[in-house]
Image (tube, rainbow, N blue to C red):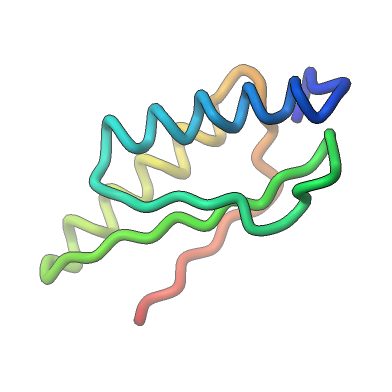
Length: 82
């Protein structure tokens, strides 16, 4: 969190980002680590489809959104296929 000084600040940024993802993509989003840190958040994003190329493209767009978000700094991303 680039500008988060409190947990309230962080939660505002994360909620806004999650809302953007939920409205723009058919995904599930959860904060899975860093819940008590005002400077760190780990989000898990899940998408289900029978079209591998579509999911791959959508996940790349989500990573790009996170990387260019004005209030966040993307440190790392990874994709797991099940």
